Length: 405
Ligand SMILES: [Zn+2]
Image (cartoon, rainbow, N blue to C red; front, side, top):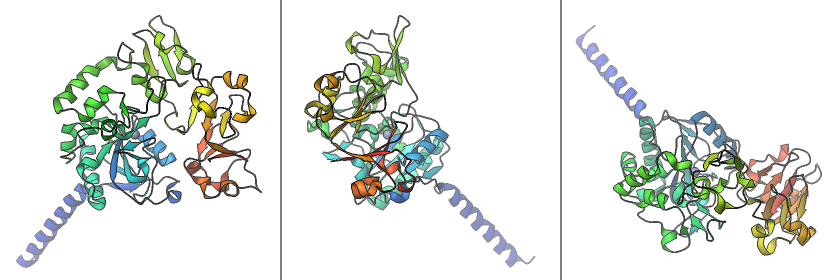
């Protein structure tokens, strides 16, 4: 082999090695599209990136997010990134949300689910992948660091028995991405320093611990973390059932284990103030996080009237009884309304579209709304599904449809 040829070969090998190391550093991303991807509408504004934690292991989390199209990307624990919904479309990841007066942030944001837990650090591989994914998306949509938010920053709750006003603290999802040390490792040098909606009194702050993690100094954040510790699931003077279980406090899947050894489900508790300190809360691994947010449940002490208020007996309030009956408010007497059984689901502000049949399609009944996230279908087994989960060509027999007025 001549000298010239050897030099060429060395150059070729060097180039190949450089290419291999570049390729290794590049984002490892593959398609895991949700079946809903093609039907999701295009998003016209992209102002925020919202970070979530799956609160569960990789395989199950990806399957669930994919099934419902609940995020644009999933970052697995080994740093692999999956694309679930195209970034130009809307993914339903933020639920009831508000930031700086703007509501329904799904319309304005990209959602990234990171496999992990809100109160734990992510893996080194996730840091590398997420940092790169953020860099790409921030440059594509011109999103500054302070608009990379966490789900816990933007989620808010409607008034409930613990909080008379709309409140921040409905979720702690993605909380770890507010920690200064974590953000720096992700290349984020700026972050919101206060909650604009609490400041403007649009919301009250219901979870001081969350607030100190989201907006405190690095030392506030560390102190807040220390104070949580092992007893996070035990009710005490300051730690209410709501602070532990939030949206799931009154769910049948949440169990309260009292110090005397007895237990109750969330929907069986009537006097929340009588729960003794030391009661352990066990959150079921349920689908309730996925249940359509527009549906409320009748509990022992939240009769239909307290849910639907003045609208309890109007036509546009729909009751799904545990025995399978579906009734509208105007069909029910005051006495029946006051005694609706536990487990009744209530929907306020909806039209009852009746059964879908071969001659009467979902589209015939409510037009393009048929596939909206806010439209609900009740299947013969009693379960409710949102419009974006339905395939119009494969609607099972005996399915009813309900759509917003
Ligand atoms: Zn979330």
